[in-house]
Image (tube, each protein chain N blue to C red):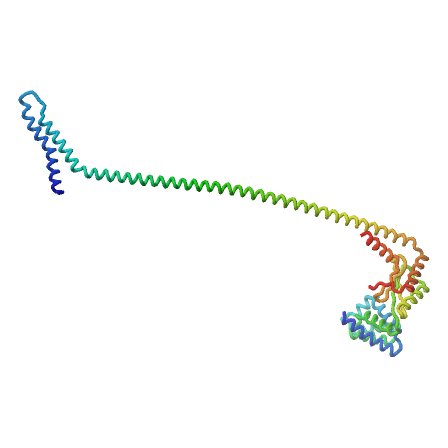
Length: 202
Length: 183
């Protein structure tokens, strides 16, 4: 079948290429005698050849072209389908990313809110601690002042007493004459004799 | 320190027994006290008797000379030479004090030290001895001392007992009482 088609193809090709030459050669012989006239036979032959050519072309290349265009169509359809699928996937991704972005945004806002709350709490805590510290320092300072005051008063009292005793000591030293000195010793001896226990153990 | 005390007790007891035997307890006491005074008041004597670099014979000669100078008895001299031979002169004060306490104990007497702002007259000393004897039930040997810083009155010490009748003490007590009341 294939060989037959090949032979036919060759004949048709020859007919197409050689046929018109033959017709033209036959027509050229008649021009020498009279006025030129339209050569209907030649024209018919050319039309016939063209139709044969078209038919041949359709017969020979039609299925392949159809097959080619069919494949091309399917390929295009597949590509369109793929493109559609990819588009849908891209849209899905976009949606997914949008959702993620929204989630991130929400999370960001939550975090910011939480940070703000934490910051506020920390600020409050620091302020409270500072207030407590200030209060403690104030109380400590008051206590210290009170202690220092007592200490100063005690020191003044002690100094006053020591001064008074020192004055008394000097007056005693100045004013105790021999008679009084001996009277004091006599009184001591008398106390020693009278009192049962006036001793200090050292 | 405890060993020094033990050594002093041994030598004091030996001298005490010797004194009892010859009925010279007070005599020995006076003589070794005289030697102790001389020993403690002379750096040269201390240096000579305590220096092992000086020949023992030489130190014997020094002791003999001092004994002769102080007119001490032969027994006291021999006792001092014994201390020198046994290298115990350094403990002489402890020995004398221990001997004195031992003699006091045997005589049933105690020693009292009286410090006063002015010197005590005889009647005050007698009265004080009497008061202390009544209080302790023993014969009292009184030693007196003057300390003007007492301001007035007197302080008596018998061993660890102190009777303080000084003006200084009264003023100190007064000061303490006032400070306690104001505190």
